[in-house]
Image (cartoon, rainbow, N blue to C red):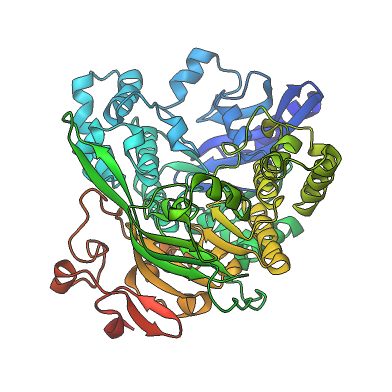
Length: 615
């Protein structure tokens, strides 16, 4: 590829040398497949200086992750990289495996998107941090403990002594991501690459992680690359932005230039999608029918947790005394941080988990009192979409088989032709092309897999659809498309929705009312417009303040106000109000007595001792 080499040499000659940590010129990444060569990135040229953060943005499939995996020699076996990439003047693409291994971890740290799959499940946190320092710094294991403790404290991990002894599955998503950052920083790298580090985290933890990254960049004068589809994250942390589309950089510039006056129509479209979060143009809310189709009364869900000593068990209350009502054609949003009980509540509503107390009544029928045969016949009216679009689909079944499966269970007398017609109609309805019907889940994108999950649920024309974080792993345009589909089903079919999410912007766009949960308890219930205009509970205010804004003049100050903190352990919750350990307005009464579920007028309720005086 002489033209590529020539462009690389020209870029190298023109590149600023002083302070440049990473310089990429004419980089092309391809993958060889059964149907030919696929180009993931094409002729990419960029640079990152010491103390600078480069935000790399674009939709899923734009080539963001593959571009930087290529630099580190982490492409799949069928991947190839051509062009040039210099790290501190050293050509990365020409390095052998041993030399690359010495750069990874020591010179360049990487924070991956999913910490659960990136961390080693059978090693403790302390062992994983020690492994990096032993390998690259030559330290003895005993000498790594104090350094590991200091790292965990710096990345704001609570109770670091205990965390060193724990395994990844014992930590929350936010804690796992902090551990990943600690491992990436263990050897003092000159470049940190963070690949979608906040995608699946709730808004408060997102803000904490982004604030941490911004602080680390300043403290260590470290070069940083932030790969993301979240323009709010870029606005808060990045100095410059590179916009990728179909593997090519189409626009680059300072964060102020790109986010305020984009030159390219594609960049402007990304910004419109990000700023649609204010939902000022949302359609009028559908009026709920008289009487609730779904009524939940004092619902509690408990899990038995085994103690370290044989035979000792404790009860963990994941959901405590939740009551709500949802009418036909209404969407109720359920929001809160990870561990707040949102998913547990969703599954308990559908009787997928047993209730320890309380009732779930659907159209006058108590689901907890139904026999298994009765409950199974009712399942066609009660459907769910799960969070993980890949994990919730059978990898051995084609798209058509996945969507048709509910018909085989609930409409066994339907002819094969009738099933095929229903599948084709439903796929078309959710925006999936007919030629995808024969593909398997691994051959589909995340957005296509989530549409498949929606098609599987909607083919039975249910009356209640529970959506459990259905778009958290998708890019912003795809999230909006899925939410628009759900809104269309709600309007056209009178579908009742329970929409569980940590993305308050999507809840605002789709739902009529919002229930806020914290540590399994109800904090606030309100019409969506009222809640966003004037939150009554301090926790609701904290959630709203953490929503990212794609404005570099506003977002850094919002991140600076992000407070560290994790929800309390549900095995040992605080006395009185469960939020008091994080609440800036807590007084002695908050620790002595649990607040009542108080009527606030206009269909609003709130559980706070001081909400009236804080208004």
